[in-house]
Amino acid sequence: MGDVLRAAGLLLAAFVAGCGCGEPLVADAGRDAGEADSGRDASADGGSDAGRDGGLDAGSVPGWRRVEGLPEPCPVWVADDPGAVLPPLRFEPCPGRAEGCRQVVVDWPVLDEPSTLRPRFGLRRQHYVDGERTLFGYRRNSPPWQGDYEYYVVAAASGEHLAVVRTLPPTREQLESPIDWCGATSIAPGPDGYVFMVSEIREPGTNSYIARARYDDPGGVERLWEPPGSTTRSAEIADTSYEVTAVTALFPEEALYLTGSEAVTVCPAGPGTPYCTIGGVVEQHMIMSANDESGWRVVVTGPGDATFRDLIDTPDADDRVPRADGEHIVWMHGVYPYVGGRPSRTELWASPYAIEPGGVAPRFINRLNVRGPNAGIGVGNGWAWTLEREAELDTSDVISVFHDLATGERRVFHYPAREKPMEAVYLGSDEVGIGVLPFGSFQDAKTLRFIRYDSLPVEAAP
Image 1 (cartoon, rainbow, N blue to C red):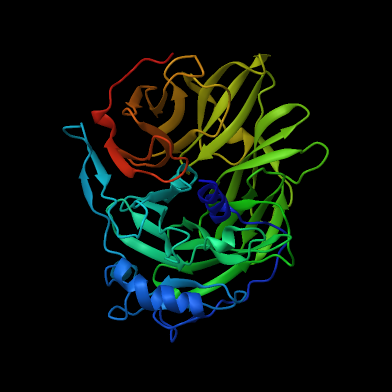
Image 2 (cartoon, rainbow, N blue to C red):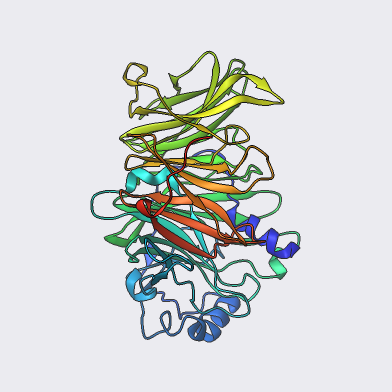
């Protein structure tokens, strides 16, 4: 089990340090998936992989392009035709629900491990929902010690695949210290294209490379950013609108705001600004939480800004964990005084979307049954999502609550026995996409479940 935990940590890890200019990454159309890149790649790609992928990735369906411009060996490929590489997601009725719920059939072939699916990122990207499609990212598994591939995918709620990045996960031997591995670690969808991160894990530190491609030109991979050297700070892509990308540390001391090949550090660690987290990027503006000696507040920065400005700062509360979708901003409002290290109560507040304090019109929505302000929150299509407790006790069951921002009505999803929640993937106008973990798992979803709001019960706020 320790190896599994370490593998999961490595596949999430990416490390941030500095900025490089955006040279194009050439995707070599002449090097297909079946062409050997190394001894390990030849074995995995030309042998057992053909059978594991059910022929979809074999030579009968060419179209993988090796991403060039990365360190060697760093095997990462993008698919010319995502729909030919991976068939559309299939759906089935949710167990125990007569109507109003469908879930992804997770049955793709792997070797000795169960098929798994991991939704990526979630509600910070809710503003990518438009009138025609809803996009989300996920990772589909292969056992890391079998030399099989992992796929970082952008999909639509209809099941269509828009982008596929393929990588070789670390082998069992590579999980032993010191690690020596390079591959894709995350993907983030935008409206016209996607951004992905490649991590080169070495001793004593790790480098990260961020690149992007358009859905209509998957071979035109362009590098946005790479560090000048190794670092030991862990980070991941926090948000992207394709033209603008934000990167934050897992234990955030700084955030990078990328526009093209330019990286601006915002909310840096130091006196007065010791901590910040990215809430979202909307219309090239970054919405963040920031903490200083006076507490938490919501801040914003925009193109060309090397600093940030206060957007929401209530003297008698901690305002934090903002989420924005271009129509609304929602945030957690922790009311003073603190009791036992937490606010005396925590509330959900909302405002029409704004990037200047004068445009913010705060409005109370509901009281929340949470331990304290945390990241279990999202917004989209007039709905807000919060992850709460069934009762005030910390040991009570966790529920997903969907708040109608127009009326304050709460619709609640109670997780079935032997299941636990993940971050909601998206909030559509009629349905919510939610990841469901099997009991005992810490990352790999049992499935993605799409539930109509009108099929959930209405329950009063605590």
